[in-house]
Length: 174
Image (tube, rainbow, N blue to C red; front, side):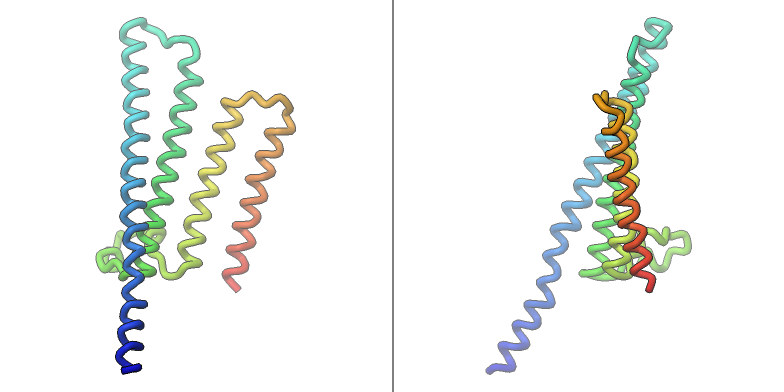
């Protein structure tokens, strides 16, 4: 009787990993939404540009700053969507099953092949770091800092995150 309970519990424990599918599916949904929203912003920006040039022959005042802001925000969204994609693929490969088609494709990107939790963490940290850099530029362009030291503080914060990622990566290699 005890052996039956133990086997049932181990079966239940092992199959409970499938709950990760909720995170995978939710991440894929978030990725899809972010890609569509970012692409829509870029299409709207392009149509706004074309309509202004055709209708008035010149761009309205402040269009350049708005365009740069929209482009940076779109890049930010694309990068975050990429984080969600890498996270979904990594969680699936780590907890559910290897993605056979990815391993058989000769042209498959190595960034999408996750072999360990540290591997997933390293890939995510790199993309998150890019998001922080983009956020830094967005803030520097659109936020009026009362004190130039505030921009330096934000850059210093990103530098510290970069150093943490670097040392984390170096520690993982030993």
